[in-house]
Length: 208
Image (cartoon, rainbow, N blue to C red; front, side, top):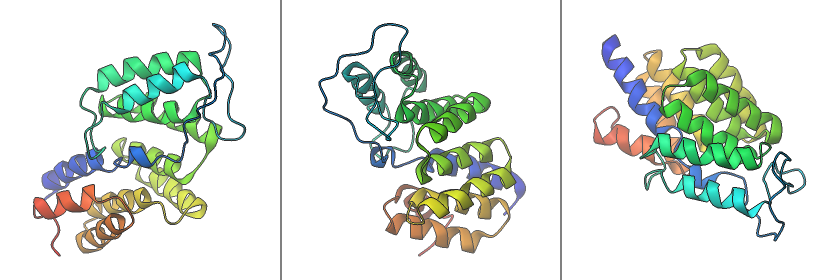
């Protein structure tokens, strides 16, 4: 495949790699804790990095509705960013909101800010999905070796996280290892992230 085609392919893949937002390992809390007073962080569920402030959780749920049905692309990234800014203002320690805002920022091309939010999410509640998400942002910045380091660490935390396979597939495509890349996309689909594999089949990039 010619280099210009590879760049286009990577762009298409990276729109799909963050699919699975609905499977984030953050659980909303139904606790009846009121929002914290202005200027103070909202209370958190112990050890989860997830706010128990109802107002923050409501805003995060509202932002999630702006992603399409396959969770592959945000229909209105500026609006999502606006909503998530409000949620983080209420609770700057919510890891879920940080990771979602990182996705919205990456969609808008603000990769450094997206990286910062993903890193903050990792510090608040480091898990495989957060590291794999940051790896995809690093790929967009062409920091391929840094992306691989994040993927290796994500795999140590949870080798069953399908986003790891999808982001690794994008790396293989960039290196011209198309057959291996397609195999990884198929595996990701079997583990619960079918979007990139279905897209690759539909456009002829991969074949069964």
